[in-house]
Image 1 (tube, rainbow, N blue to C red):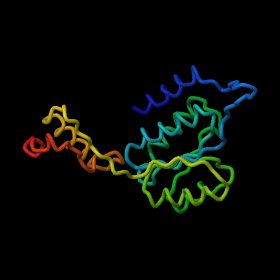
Image 2 (image 1 turned 135 degrees about the horizontal axis):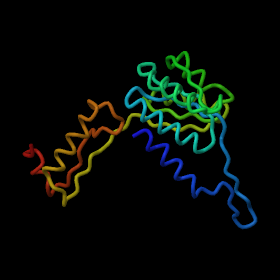
Image 3 (image 1 turned 90 degrees about the vertical axis):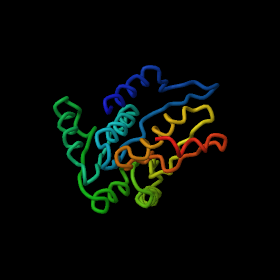
Image 4 (image 1 turned 30 degrees about the horizontal axis):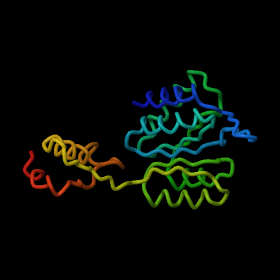
Length: 194
């Protein structure tokens, strides 16, 4: 799954206009600069690949701080990049906890963008630290994800899918279904599905 992110980013670049004339104006799209990436413990390779693909496609070097609970996927990725000949400084890996490594990363003046996936309180801290020098910030925080059943849905399949969304990865996913929304016209059939 992680490789798909790199492939999609590469494909998107095929038709991307880095310079675009709009009337008398020339719009030039260029890399933002160093991106600080902080990834969660769940799906470490996929989450890291998603963030790296976007940053690399945009031409930004990165400093990656993976979760201290799952650092080895990033270490392996660093080894792969080194063996592949990725120029030094394009991918940088720092391991450690949020206070000791994450906070200084998000406050560093040479980091121009922060991308974080994780908890709301940590996301709030990153926003505050990034605001000091007007960094751009991308946050994917814990969510309240509804599972919506439509009136014409197959009730048994909908019930099975809703259950799977709740228990996938033991519920430790920001998109885990936290509630199911069902039209009143079919709600009677839902509890009896098994």
